Image 1 (cartoon, rainbow, N blue to C red):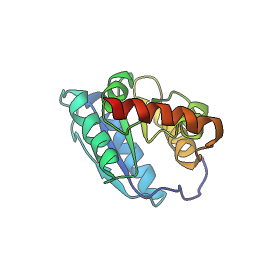
Image 2: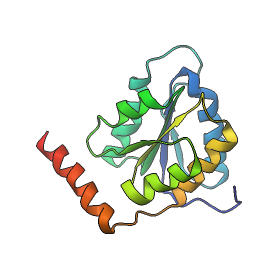
Image 3: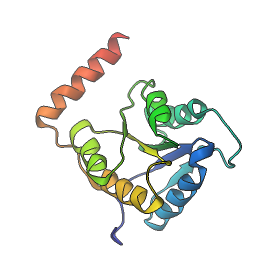
Image 4: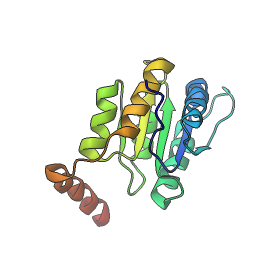
Length: 155
């Protein structure tokens, strides 16, 4: 990790009960980098249903209320599936920094899904930093994203 400021306008974060601690650490990390953060909950480790929280973040991204989102659950799978149901959202489940960077460079992922049960906070911070610092490459990747958007418009 570096001490540089991360480029971002605003980020919404949410988790389920098993991701609350990692979410809190990421909020502190992002704020220390000068990023504007909105916490969409929950605020305790009492059992909750992950779709309720992942969809809140995804809808905020879709409406433009936040530029990007980060969603967290034990495996990252449930929040990823949930967020991807929202029109305009491209959520990517990432377990390592390279995936985080490529999620942005190749798919322009606007939501990052993290598996709290499979990575520690240090790894998560590096993934987030690489994801936020990467730029979409356009080129051949743009036509693929356009196909996804066209399919969304049909539905």
